[in-house]
Image (cartoon, rainbow over all chains, first blue to last red; front, side):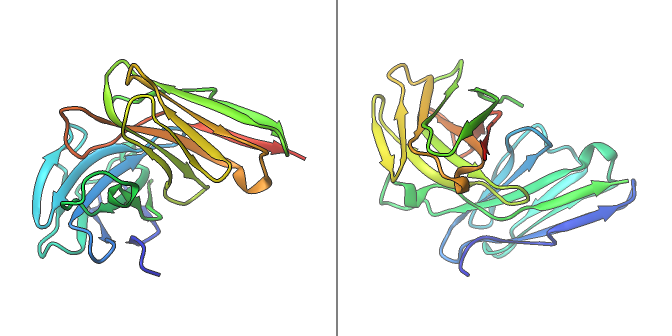
Amino acid sequence: DTGVSQDPRHKITKRGQNVTFRCDPISEHNRLYWYRQTLGQGPEFLTYFQNEAQLEKSRLLSDRFSAERPKGSFSTLEIQRTEQGDSAMYLCASSLRGLAGEGSYNEQFFGPGTRLTVL
Amino acid sequence: GQQLNQSPQSMFIQEGEDVSMNCTSSSIFNTWLWYKQDPGEGPVLLIALYKAGELTSNGRLTAQFGITRKDSFLNISASIPSDVGIYFCAGRTLFGNEKLTFGTGTRLTIIP
């Protein structure tokens, strides 16, 4: 399977603990995105990388959240001092933005997500 | 954060029926996308639209990019059981970056 993979698929933690999620994008994709999805809502943008550079961060990404993509391949999203309001599905997506321009092959392809429950 | 308005919020139909749903925004978008999400999974891209007025099909699915650039429509013909799921529209702004703004979703249920 050459799609986007995320690990773990489910995480249950106690309030105040730190958690880290991993995303492995489609291998040739140079852009990687993180979204958060709460129950009954659509995904909301958190941040994205082009190669190893973090190019944009949403205001949703508080200072307890940090994302990295150190070698321009996989990415990690860490949440420190988790709160119950952090409970959500965290989705990763990747895309290839090259010289070919528009086309569905350049769009974002999503992984299965990591469901976080903070007790 | 901002979410696009999708309607209807949910649909209950019989197998074989046609389905129509739409998505509206107060902002102009230069790209409209339609995704489908199954429970516990990530969204899967169905159709991408890049020009105002564009009509694009993918099998039984047809989507249109509204001429005002502020709306998009998705139709599913002759629905089958595997069409069950949540359909999301997503837009990318004219002067924007790569982030997608998603709609609130339309949940499709097929009644036996």
